[in-house]
Image (cartoon, rainbow, N blue to C red; front, side, top):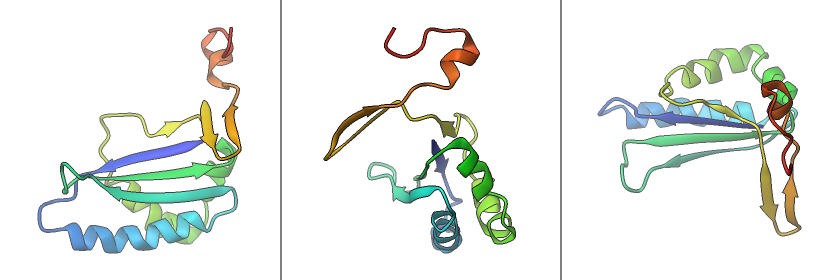
Length: 118
């Protein structure tokens, strides 16, 4: 499961945003089931940022947001994210040094659509 959140901090708040993000990223990455968190800055628009967190499962993602320190530091940062696009995604194709892995969709069954590959 991927969490993808885009941010556009207020002009002059880049340092404050980065300070809040440092703590939030470290807390989120330390949660069981979190496979990693990246915070990246847009090259073309340096006032735009994206946070991408990878979780083993949807359940791991939900549990990662439950501890008090996460609710105190991560959730407020996530509430600053732009809301014009979805933020939670299921993984479909994952490629790495070991090759390509296709993950079955949990959503295709719910939507009544065909499973992946059909």
